[in-house]
Length: 312
Image 1 (cartoon, rainbow, N blue to C red):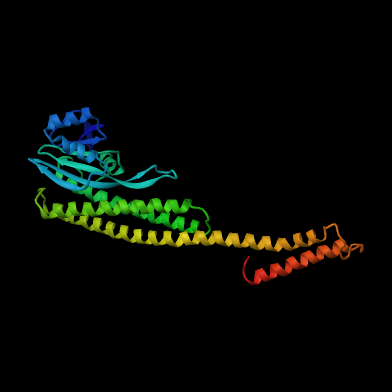
Image 2 (image 1 turned 60 degrees about the vertical axis):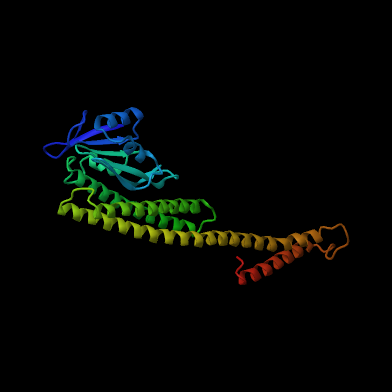
């Protein structure tokens, strides 16, 4: 999908139909026709469009002539609201040309939607450097937001696992741990890109832009630290609760085994007195009651012994 936006005189974002100076071109999972239209109309390398569409593409900066490509990984939540929801990262390409600014992404993301819906203050499509820094800042804050969500989900799973004997909660934790691995890898490469932007003169920056980029680097490093902390916590919790689930199962098996032993004595006594041979009390009219009491007595004694040993 190809959309073209431009900031109006009042600062409100407007969608237009043709390429114009100072406009923002946003490509979401574009087809070949849309890619060729942008490449031929704006004279940018086709690889600048295709590279961000590769899910495995790493974060990097590339410059060819007057065109600059910046690729960073952004976090998204897949299958939101379902049991299979998962946090992953995908590349976002930002292309700076002499006249326009272009973004390329495989999927529509809430980060880009915030710019489209005019929720970002002091956002203008013709201020390309500021636009890049604002995007990078929103990406860093979304990492922090998703990390907080992961932490809350971990706490909920912790409460469930204390009484659980199933593997579903462990699978959920494994999914969260996998998300943290994605975040760790992506944040590290994003951090290299932002520091490279700070050290090299890829973009013309004013003092305010420098401060914004420094804020981006701080937010990114904070997200990296939080990701590493949560990853260590989650890894330890998975090991601990794998043992908890095993102990829960062992406890249930111990209780069932104890009940089986307790019920063995009535069965054994009943079997002995059910034989077709001469037996004690066979002519006594209260024999059934005596046998019943004997069975209960043996079961109670066994149950009390198990109770004192905390088998129940």
